[in-house]
Figure 1 (spheres, rainbow, N blue to C red):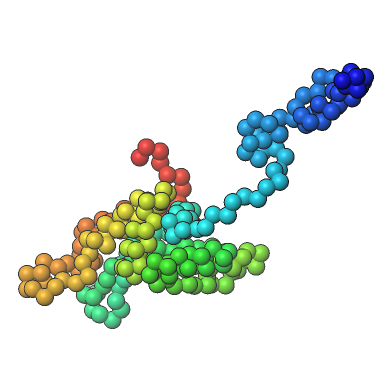
Figure 2: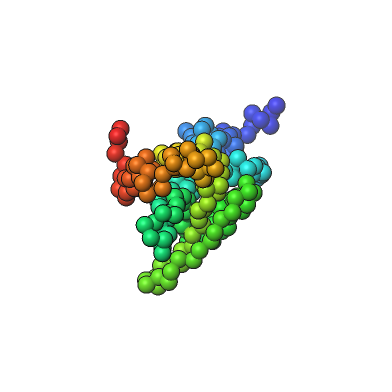
Length: 219
């Protein structure tokens, strides 16, 4: 109508620019933070809406645990020597999965996940630090055959950095039986762990994997 025609041009351009997020005046451009991909993914001005709450399933928690093991964990195997037994006739294989951190909330979540899948864990306070500027470190440890097997089987689909160590530990657990059985033949064929060349070789391979430093590319 006549009111629209009578309105000054500057008022029209200022209103349009305000609606588009630009600056009033001719030649104003839209703010790229509010449009396109950047605005869509929240990289510009924050949107006034709440993010949906996603309930954590056990799969989510196991994937998180695998990431913690990759970044903060240690997987190893060795031989526990029995003191006072002569020639170490009763030495046994040792399995280890340990996670160290200075944040107790992270360690408590690890223990909670382990309990949820039926695994017993042990919590340790590391020895007193000489440098008082550093935080006290805690440690969650899995040392039994059942615990290590269960943790590895549950997290293996999500492991990346420690996947090779986890697969090797699983192979070593399957290689060493719980006992030599009752038959005479089984007793004769059974080897003490310190005389088992396959297990000793696995120990050496695990030591090589756990050496500090950047992993070789393509090796």
